[in-house]
Each structure stands twice: as structure tokens, then as C-alpha cells.
Image (cartoon, rainbow, N blue to C red; front, side):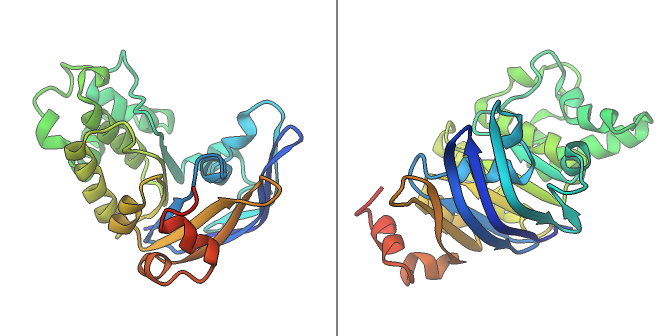
Length: 257
């Protein structure tokens, strides 16, 4: 099951350049929350702050508080502990090219100490079924590499790899941006299904996608001093049809951004 996320007074920097300004956001457990806004407004920076990937960039820093379930992300929790509970799917599918489909999914399990073949088999199959990929690859699990799959299949393989370690939160950074409409539709259906069981946070430039798959939407815009601001968050239907902030209305109607 998923867990909630609470972000309080989060600021993020690239050296002396501030990319996020005083972000406060609560993400509900077992829902899909979309992050929308124009390029450069801090959406991807924000999602990478949730699993401490932002700090891997030289001279990048964060202050503020992030809680994921009972973990205080920046106080007493190691990045390794955190990433066992928080999965990540990137804009570009990144399967391990020299590994088989099976070993791609099992990689995280093996790092976490799984060794029994029967147990690995069960989790790999369950994860591939959860990502709606098993029926397409079941006859070539050990014969084909992850890199041999189509773009949409590779992205679903990466989702299966993230799901294998049973995360409570799945972060997705533009997971459909490089996919055709058919593959995008499969990923969107998968997001809807997953959000009933785990917490999904999705960065997307596609407002129609946000409307289709998310329960809640957070709108990031560029502030007057050119830093990323969270200007509105609420149920997706309300954010698009009855936004409270005039800047949100201007963005979702295409007048800015």
C-alpha cells in the first residue's frame, strides 16, 4: 500500500540559483498526483527532491522538510533506505542493456538479498503482470535483452523493475514523452491501475494526460523572480474547471506557458 507525502517549506538550489521556492504540498496515499507547469518551473527538480536524487548533482542543495510515510527524508533516513520504498521511472526508458528481461526486473531484488530462484520467479512474473508486460515477453524472459524491446515495452519494463521491490511511492518524470499514442495509452491505463495500490506522483507537460490519469493536480509556475512556485493544488477536475488562482486559469487555458 502507498503512503502519504508531506512537503514543508522546501527550497532547492543549483549552486546559487534557486529552482524551487517555499514549496508546501501534501500528497495523498493511494492516489495519482500530477505535477504540471511550463518548462523550467521546477517540476522535475521537485520530484527528484522526494527521493534525494537532486543532491547527487554537484553543488545542488535542498532545505526544508519532506516526509514520506514515517520517513523524514532529510533527517535520519539514508538514500538507500529511502529508495527501497520510493521507485522512480524516468523520461527516457533506461533498461540495463546487457541484461535479459528477467534480470532487468530482478536486479533490485538481488541487491536487496533475494537469492532463491522460486521467489525471484514469482516476483518477476508479478511485477511484469502489474506493468501489463508479462503476456508480451513471457516466452523470451531469458532470451532477449531489455534493450531489444520497443520503446513502450522498455518503459513498462522499467516500471516492472521499480515495482519489483514493492515501493510505497512511485515517482514518474514524463514517462510518456518519448512514446507513441498507443504506448502512451498503455502507460496511462497502468498509472490508473497502480494508483489504487501505491502513491503515484507524475510529472507531465501534457495537461490532457494529467486530466485523464490523476486524482489531484499541482500547478507549478515561474514566479516574478524566476524561481519555481507552487501556485495551486487540488482535485484535478476542480483545478482544470474552476481554478482558484488566476495564474492557474491563464496556464490551463493557454494564455501563459
